[in-house]
Amino acid sequence: MSRVIDTAEHEAVRTEILELCREAQPYGTNPNVLRAALKKSGYDLQERDLLTQVEYLKGKGLVETQEVQNRRLDIQRLIVRLTPAGTDYLEGNGPDIAGVG
Image 1 (cartoon, rainbow, N blue to C red):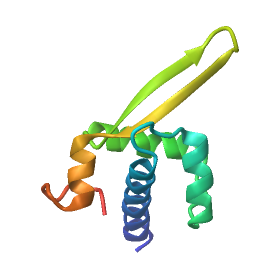
Image 2: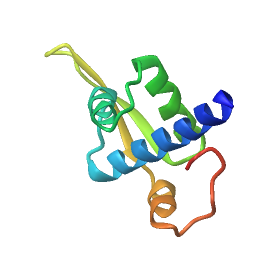
Image 3: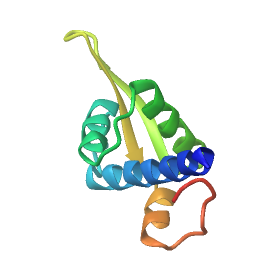
């Protein structure tokens, strides 16, 4: 039974990530912001677990990631953005996608 709960929670987290990325359009967001927002929604994920979910969504074509950096300021960030396919999914204009609730 716990496996079913884990699967349902993963699907809910993935949907929440998509919604957060939609809120951050067109600029995108980074994993630190996603983690903080998810924690407020009751999902306390470790960074590794969050990145696993982002990669899953990336594999489905729903989000894209980009490394941005400023060497002068020694800043490096991963930016997560919703793709057009991700927008279609959230708006109900695309097919159901297994693994995303």
